[in-house]
Image: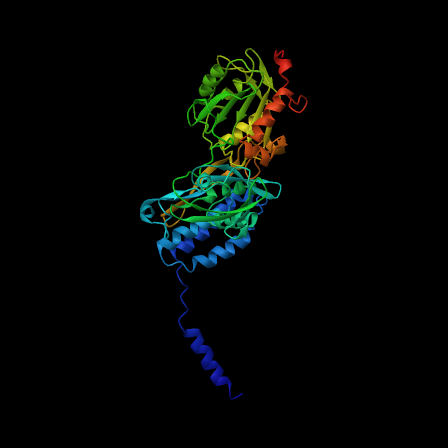
Length: 439
């Protein structure tokens, strides 16, 4: 009972003590909170498809945002957060005063590739193409890559993918792997790359590449076509087997008219290959393009209706070639040929899976905005799932043959020629004979 006056006094002191003032959230914390909610609202439809645990992402980035003290730390945290939506188109835009904010550790201005591109055949890694610096140290196409910088080749590539995923959103795993075999090999000029390889005689070789001026930008076909017409966007000619070959590096707005030029130059052929490997996208009239591959006076109407268009539309057998770096509009191009029944599609893997409608989300700080995918393009693809996060799977997966690589032969082009020589009728709705093609 004697303790009661003391207890009353203690309660009185507590009641009259000033309340603790809640800490004001930083600009970065406010941006992260807003971004987490907005990204879930706008992009959440893709989270299950892309195996994204957004609760875990939110917990991690709210904790990291509390440690940010400067705009220079604020920006890279948002870059890393945006990468977690696994969206190849996603990115950050500096706006207003944010335009003056620089990345804390600038990438070397003089970047280069090692003079080679890689590919996976089964569970092994091979030199797909060797040129420039790699060729100078004696590396040849078709060599197996055993180790990269003292790690097993596949392990090194997978680690490199995870490093790049921290700041780059890849819509699919196959896009990430295709990237690391080209762009992902880049380093600053003067840096080195240690390789252990097995040559064509099964002998182990060690080589050191010093980065200089080689490109790391993939060019699509195994080697750049020789003797073809056109430019960097579109090149065309005939294969050794006499079939037409059009390689689209991009999809410019005037693509249907550029295809008119290609078809006129190629002339009368028994089959046509549309090569979309390493196609970087763009934008054009899809119906106008497909019309160039519907015989004059005819209509294609399997999944969607297309009228013949252009001065010299082509009506014969077609094979489309893709890879994991067939992006965006290159994927919708693939989709209209496959999903709408016009051509047989082959490739090392599905297309990249980054084809979507996008939106911009401005953040409360007024320093940054996020650019992200909100809906998939070509919703009729993949059984109504669209392209984003999936890609367009080929009718047939075709890996490079190491012996072909060693001899400079493009395995996928060879397979395309074989398919055109004996077209897989029944696997493609379009049968040229039904449209007046009598060969």
